[in-house]
Length: 278
Ligand code: C2E
Ligand code: CA
Ligand code: CA
Ligand code: CA
Image (cartoon, rainbow, N blue to C red):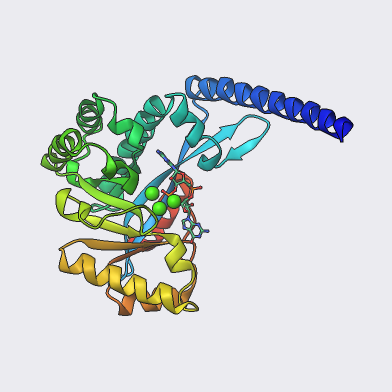
């Protein structure tokens, strides 16, 4: 038993070492990625359920790592948040996607709205508001063409600190969407306290429609509640036509998901716009 214990210990320290080294390498690579411009913005269409037209896009970051390929955000956003790199990365995504959508609005889709994910860490940065104003100014995108996607966790922070930022954002005409709705620790009172415009129903509810009655009932209830509060609703992760049909019947306004399209490179999104608008 003693022998086994020692071996286990050794195994464990080696394992930790490997992980620490891996993490160190990842950090180094991430910093390089930023300076060498290895990040890309992909765009996933948001579709109006009434008209079936593309009304917006969500900006989703990708990392094009040399010799490795396209790395999804779940593999580097959490670490970027931990080491503070999310601030320059977040700013880059905002600027890049606003600049792109300004062009698309002028050429192909005059009413296109861009949704950008904002990490809670970015809200802790006192210069967030300045950055947003600067980006709108530099790109020429009107505030009402920008939507920020935030998560429920953020709303658990200090109301006194958050509310002035929210109000200033709203003054710029920017709308606010509550992402992953239904998965957090949401106290529904947040919806009254913060100037939220849109609820984005989490994929985990949509995924089980129509098979699971619970998901059907909850989704219906979320839509009814949001509508009563004057909020619009977006369903994410729509993969099947039954889900599309259910959401349309339930008077959900917008959908996003593989059923319509995966997130696309700027070139592919532009091709899609060309097909759809004309
Ligand atoms: P999210 O904000 O909830 O984004 C939606 C995710 O669901 C995206 O994954 C999208 O590709 C995926 N998705 C959309 N439709 C479907 C579908 O029908 N089926 C399935 N299975 N998946 C679908 P992605 O692009 O890998 O992004 C993962 C997460 O990374 C995002 O979740 C968001 O939390 C974070 N993220 C991405 N870009 C950014 C960014 O620029 N800034 C920050 N702070 N976070 C980001
Ligand atoms: Ca999102
Ligand atoms: Ca989401
Ligand atoms: Ca999510």
